[in-house]
Amino acid sequence: MNILEAQLTNAGVPVESQTLERLHAFYQLIEAGNKRANLTSISGWESVRDELFARSLPLAPLLNGAQPGDRLIDIGTGAGVPGLVVKIIYPHLNVMLIDATRKKIDFLTDAIDALNLKEVTAIHARAEDLAQQPEHRESYDFAVARAVGSLSELAELLLPFVALGGTAAALKSTGVEAEAEQAGFAARQMGGEPAVLSLVERPGVDRPGDGPADTLVTWRKSGPTPESYPRRSGIPRKTPLAAPSPKKTGAEASAE
Ligand code: SAH
Image 1: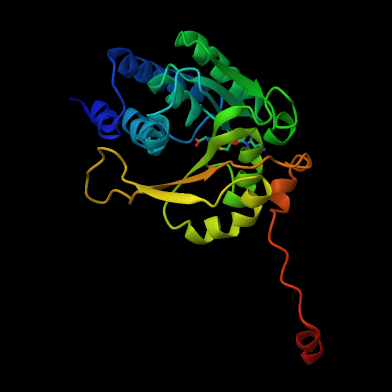
Image 2: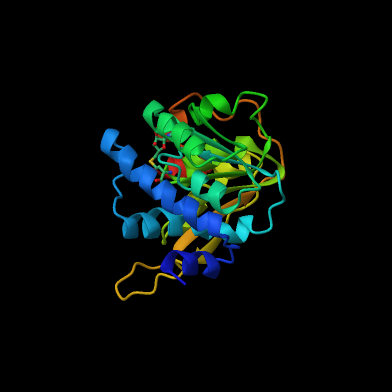
């Protein structure tokens, strides 16, 4: 078994020969695309395998039980991470890839064609705008993102896309407990339940000096998102939602 196959198997992903062929083909498309446009700083087979493909796999525990036709949206997908990797390993999912950079979407549209994938679409849009469109708002089983922003920003960008009972998920490195705590207010405003953090070993990568695990941060959605969210384009990043500071009592205020 090669390393990629071991990584997928360890994550509990059913591996078909088409999966491996498509991931290799996707790697070649990334390399070729990177020569024309700056898609990702990662290059070389081992780096793409370990940094882009394997680091999408912490989503596996969430997605292994997904039903055929379940809808997933990847916000700020870049070169297709994790969304196009997910589509390749779970071909039965219906996947939407969005990014604010046109050249990345052009690359993905060609890649989808070259890989002969169906029920996956790449759209050039900002999450803040797309989430206000009725066909996208509260209509996904899963909204996911990696390397796009802080958890407060992501709670506001992801949860408006999620249908009641669905899940928003952010791929993060380790040490994000305080960030998740801070994002609790934003998640609650969007109708999300408290975050669940799961530490996930990087699958099948077992070499000395390898970094620690990654963290999968998930929010289940159990209430509707108020119409005013997400706020206007750029605001979730510039002014992340935060709990209002507790009101001072008269005595505290006069003691200052
Ligand atoms: N998810 C990829 C790319 C991360 S780079 C990976 O893990 O490799 C962040 C990407 O998010 C960029 O391509 C940027 O264009 C996109 N992005 C940032 N904010 C966005 C927003 N509000 N809506 C849509 N895309 C956004």
